[in-house]
Length: 248
Ligand SMILES: O=C(O)CCC(=O)C(=O)O
Figure (spheres, helix red, strand yellow):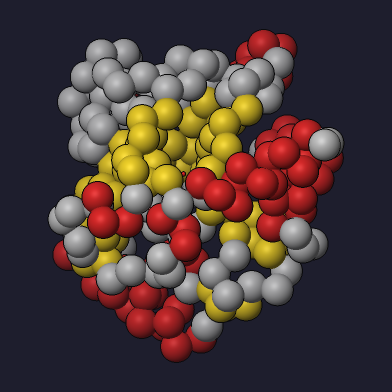
C-alpha cells in the first residue's frame, strides 16, 4: 500500500493524521527567518483584523497573522507537491489553496476553544483540510492540539461566539465525549498534523514555553462551494464581534 493510501485510510477513519519530520530542520530555520522579517516589515502594514495580539501594546503577545503568503517564500512553500499532492490525495479532489495563517500561543494566553474549521469556512459540501505545521516541540504544557477522533463524521455542529482573540466561534456543546474520543496530539518541531474541516479540535493554554509557533495552511476541495447565505450570516456576526472588541 502506498503512503498516500495509508494516510487516506487513516484520515478517513479518524479525521486527522500526524506525519513526523514533514519539514526538514533547514526548512524550519528558513520559515523562522521569514516569519521574523514578516513580523518586522509586513505585519505593521496590515489591519488589526489580520495581525492579532492578546494585548496590542505588548508585541510578545502576538497571537495570529493572516496571509503569510504575502512573503514569496511562503507562497512557494505552500505550493510544493509535498503539500498539494498530499492535500489532493486526502480530499480525493483537486484543491483550492487558501490563506496561510500563523498561530502563536503566547504564555498565559487563552486556550483555543473547541471548534470545527468548517463552521468558519461555510462550504457545501464541507470538504477542506488544514496542515498544522509546528516550528516548536508542542506538548500538553504549551498548547498541544486535541482532536475528537472520528467527529468529522457527525456534520457541522452549532457554534456560539467565543471571547478568544483569533477564534471567534466555539462549539456550543460542552460535553465532547458524545462525538468521539478526545486525543492529545503532541508534536516535534517540523511535524505536521493534518485535520479535516469537520473534525472537532481544541488546544490548551501555553503554560511553559515563551512561544508555540505554528503555520496553518488550508486547502478547500474543488467540489466544496461557498454557501452565500451561510457566509453572509457568518461575516455579519464576525463584524459585530470585531466591532465590540475594538478591532475595526
Ligand atoms: O493552533 C491552535 O491553537 C488552533 C489552530 C486551529 O484551530 C487550526 O489550525 O484549525
